[in-house]
Image: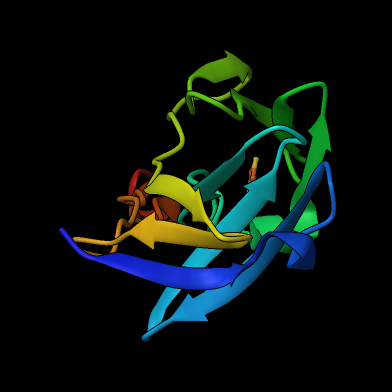
Amino acid sequence: MSWKRVCSASEVAEKSLKQFDVEGVPVLIANLGDEFRAYPPLCPHMEERLEESGICEAGVLTCSKHLWQWDMRTGEMRGEAEKPLLLYEVKQDNGDVLVNIEKELEYEYDEETDDDDDSFWD
Ligand code: FES
C-alpha cells in the first residue's frame, strides 16, 4: 500500500475531471462535490482520454465518444458500457487528495479485428 499526494482538492473543480501524473502513473481525479474518485485516465472502450471525452453529470460519467456510462462512485456500468471503470482508493488529508497506488491500473483492450474480417474473403 502506498498513499501518494495527487493534488490539492481545490485544483479539481466540482463535477469535473482532471488528469495528473503521480510518479509516472497517470491518474484521473473526479470531484463529485462531496467526494473525490480516482480512475485510470483512458476510457475502457477505446483508449480515449476521459479528461477530454468525459462528461460528469448527476454522479454519472459519460464518455462522449460512444456514450459508455458509469456510476462515478462505484465504477459500475450504466447504459451502453460493456466494461466497468477501475478505481484507485482515495482519501483527503489537510485539503490534499491522496490516492493509494499499489500498481498502475490498466484496461485490457481487444485487438483490432479488421485483418480478420479481410481474411474471411480470402
Ligand atoms: S471511447 Fe469511450 S465510449 Fe468509446
